[in-house]
Length: 157
Length: 279
Image 1 (cartoon, rainbow over the protein chains, first blue to last red):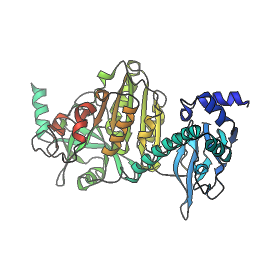
Image 2 (tube, rainbow over the protein chains, first blue to last red; image 1 turned 120 degrees about the vertical axis):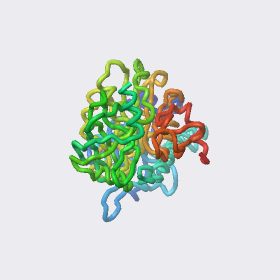
Image 3 (cartoon, helix red, strand yellow; image 1 turned 180 degrees about the horizontal axis):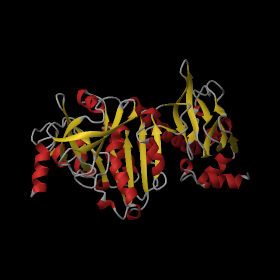
Image 4 (spheres, each protein chain N blue to C red; image 1 turned 135 degrees about the horizontal axis):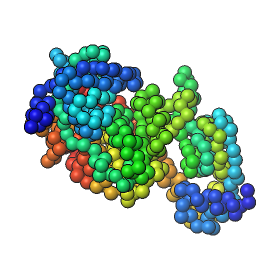
């Protein structure tokens, strides 16, 4: 896909909402469109975290293999969501597995490429990190809510 | 006069109802259809009845069906979490239960006509909201966009799974679970998160919310983030209800008695009191 088309595609996603054309151009320069078949592994725990994904269509399960239970899903990622943030922090290794629940169309961003651009242009870097912080904050908030186990038995008559 | 007297009697004296049908929904939840032995109860969506198990005790249960008049069967979905609710769930067809009511106020479904409808339910909270969904389905042209957002702990804890599928023909249905294995192909996450992506007009939607109080809190916050005013966010509360008629005071929350003035409140009316931990 030509870079201008990728810029336009990204601009319509919530994660990039309000980002300047220049910043979209910078970020799109590190991206390429990819497709995963149902059941295909997108991220594997322990592998180098050299990319993140923005999902255009489809669903992916984030989880971990927990013996003897098998694969446990902790979150499902869908259209418009961001997948992967280990590319942003040392040691740049994936902490969880991600697997396509359905066919997934996504844009894959080269983490090393984007880190270089963030370091070279700190205003751009701040904008990118701020957007990831927002995603992290929301996921942390929802995770806290799940830890409360609100559907557990309360006092009952 | 006779009707008023019957209603008064039904509020204080249990009327005999017989279990006509019992269906297990999940490992700890059953749906019972109860038929009146003589006088029935006209229970509106949002209201609850005090269900009396003879020799065991009495608990408040919201109706999950949509009775049209006093002679209709009453449908209750009950989660077995205590002595009385376990006894209700264990009542086989033919068993006799006592019902007092109807108690409390109703969901403002008619007032929502002309706008969008958003139902947000967590766990057993879908049961009191099922009448809202059934009413919306049976009066579909009266409403704009309509969506049901439903969350449970796991896929095995989801209620009305067969009905959720049929509802999709007329309203948007989005389901999520807190935890899953690989056999679950749907969403994993908490139900308030579904609000962020739901399709509705913030300036024309009425939101009906029921579930654990913490889940309601986060759902209200998510609705506010979408621009829904507090006056059109309705929630059904469950506190320590004993008498069901506003006499004993156990369910007092600030200036209100939930069994008498609720259980349905707008966020504008009840929000300030929910924020006070001492209440």
